[in-house]
Length: 182
Image (cartoon, rainbow, N blue to C red):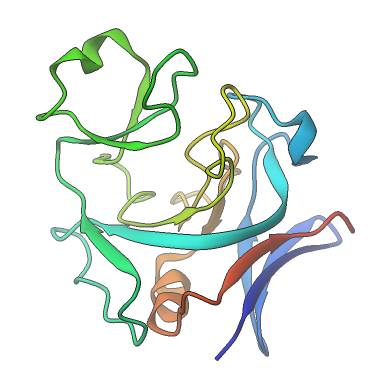
């Protein structure tokens, strides 16, 4: 089983290598940035080695992921699912079910239920999670590419079919590695 997914740059394109397989991917619009310089909203993908934590999916757009490693938590995205990106909030860089949290109106968040296909399938990374440092970046995911394959706001994105393939072979030993060799 593959232990790392490594993002590298060749010419002006980015690729994710998983063992012998290579997939075209996109990163943040502002390129990449070392963790210590990462800031909320800077549109940069953080350099580092990030554990893949849990999977989120839209059941109206993709089937529930079937994975060999049963230790992965799989979460169904509903219209109530958001990710807090507000550094002033206690829930910064965390999943929130807005139906359970009435005060969410006073904070900034990113909706996981989107009209485009970018969040049909999402993998949460461990970026800025242990510990969570306010304003050092939130919602750094691996998700589906936009239809025009444009850059992201800091995540890594892949074609949906490629992400489905990778998830089938995911394990809790897999890390997403963004290298500083561009």
